[in-house]
Length: 127
Length: 153
Image 1 (cartoon, chains in turn red, orange):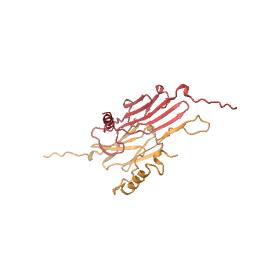
Image 2 (cartoon, chains in turn red, yellow; image 1 turned 30 degrees about the vertical axis):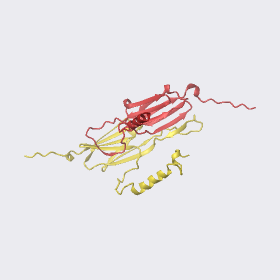
Image 3 (tube, chains in turn cyan, green; image 1 turned 90 degrees about the horizontal axis):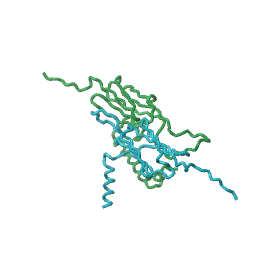
Image 4 (cartoon, chains in turn green, blue; image 1 turned 135 degrees about the horizontal axis):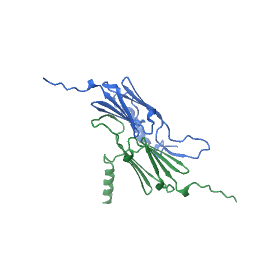
């Protein structure tokens, strides 16, 4: 019974409405935290969801480009109008202080480290 | 050193990769002629082209651009979209606060995509907008090219 439920939920996730592309990201780390930049072209602010569930960060966005109603596609490179990608955050990051900024389809997430997790130099004693 | 464990020369996916490349070499174009301006899949920016009875719509997915720096040119029936995307990564300077780059998937640099337009478009009636990182170029079709109803007397 448990296995069948799992199969059903994963099949549901692969239904055409739920299929999503993984957006390309740049991840940088400096001493204060992590900066994540994600390319989400076509996603307006109201269609972007950023969720932190425990240690998992989930970014999901729906492309809402305004197209004329009688548009017939002739050549399509970007077929799936949804982006989704998740990351596990390590414990020294502080998800409660995440800052997010979406501009021109680029999501800029700043995840600071816990205040006490800033790198500390440890003096090496000799002798 | 290697992008991932899958791309070792003798790795698990190595044989699949080689098989895909060999099949692509033999069957990739399937004998059909491809557009002389086509690019490999995954080029930046992705482009979608659609048609309505009154216009041709081109969408280029180019996030993070300054719209004044995107060049949109129509010349002899070919629409060219070009520009340069600045890298978001900090330039490396000695003595800088240390920044580690874990993932660098977003492309940067100059790009150019070309779309060949059908003969019935009017290059003087073009409208381009940039919103949420998507450039939409709308080219109207000539009036005379639209189907005209002919009444039977």
